Length: 471
Image (cartoon, rainbow, N blue to C red):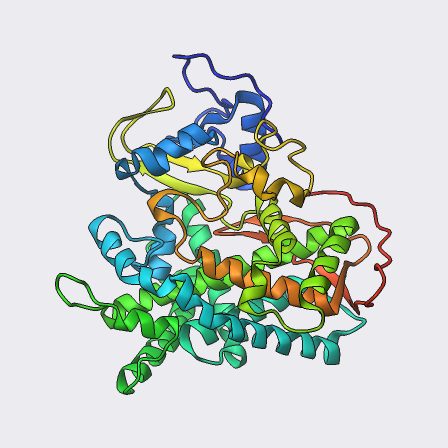
């Protein structure tokens, strides 16, 4: 999957696969966008022009071009039309809103994500993870199960506790199913040749609207209950409700709070669960990395739960997380649309052109990452990352729209990974093969099935499986 094609000569038109008459590469992107993107960049270089029916699609996986679009001339780019399905699902939250309204919402929301405020959530993350591990000891020890399903349940509960001060575990199945329906609808909406408005009562739209009503009702009830109370609370919802515009003194309306909360629930639940699943998939495939990780966790924590000061000491744990998100970035593609003509790293991009930036492909460029398919946390040593160019690593996006919850996500990943490693061994079931689902986020298509056992302290685990890597 590495990009090995020769560089494009100055002034040479951007090339790409010709595809089929009329439809271009439409069937290929429907079949596997990851394969299409990877094979196209391998054949034509990091920047490629694709065609889907009448639409030209500029896939930019060169750091210089990415820096131009996300930073240097970001004002010339808005979210692409392919975010429309998410906008129907999430409303005008930080993920989907644009322009001055987005700037206002970002400014209102930013203080809630300051590291000092996030520190208060570490204990809740620890408590939720301990509850999960205790349940594993009682119910799942010695059995095989879908790890993705389990960590989805965990991250959903953590979101409920930290964002809403609400116990969502009891509602996890109903809300989780509703979220899945909504996400699948948003993905299908993007891929549809004819986009049927959500108010048309097709079977898919009926399911989506029912799911959306379930989610909206829960969030609206929580906001209303908080409004009736005398204390807004110290969770993220309380911080957002207390936020006021410096110029006008206005806060967020209930509708806008719902939009932001839905965005944060999706981002804080779905993407973190995906990242956790891929981390332990890779660790099971690479026993030497797991042994080194276990040694660090035992050295720093022993048998006690991690506290906030410990997270800085879990350096190798952080490197493992970062390397896993290099190979499996939860946000596998970012898209923009040009507001006006532009010149991007020598490439002429016309008005209304759709730009695709794929961290999945970017992170597998052999010129940026030697042995790009290999799982090597050592490449994230501080002395290595200090010399890395801008926009070579994009697990949380880049530019002004850099993920507002990145510090929250990293803290949660450090807590959960270290606590699982303390107590449990998760081995892939024999014969398991990972399949990827590049939907709204990058998911394991059929989950990841593992066998649970207790970790033996004081000696290295017996892990004899070869450290193969497959996608």
